[in-house]
Picture (cartoon, rainbow, N blue to C red):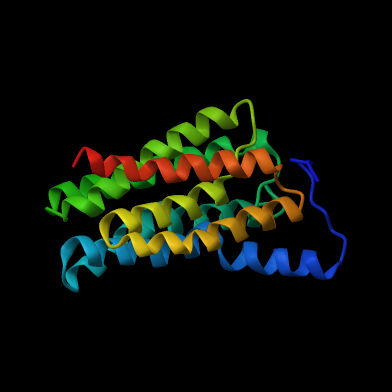
Length: 201
């Protein structure tokens, strides 16, 4: 299926599985677990969890809260915001939230690794916003891929095995009719590229 702006509502077992996968591994959940792991790995002790939570709050939880708020106002039907033309405000909220969190990290002398991860996510969001003006690249795929790549860069290459989760997310987005294969591959590739930031650290 290559539809990018509609939802497949057929109640098949595959679609039920795809719905579960896309809901469980939605960006806010992946970022919460991932940023906590990145913070812990880069700090080397428990205080990194605090910086990781700040990162998750700014990159995932606040944007998710904004989406829920707009849903309550009737702006969007669900958290997926399947209409590409309505997504720009979300990206600007993400950019502002991550930017604010990054400033707090600089002022609070956060570990370099967690700050680098935040800046990588900020840069990724800029690219997502730019591409989204003409093509509906998959944000879920980008986040699922970025978190795995960043964890592999700061913790252990064994984290690359978690790309099985990223593949599952990509499959679910296509199965539900939210994205084409190309759009999920593009998002996943962009997410993987975020780890390149650690070559500069």
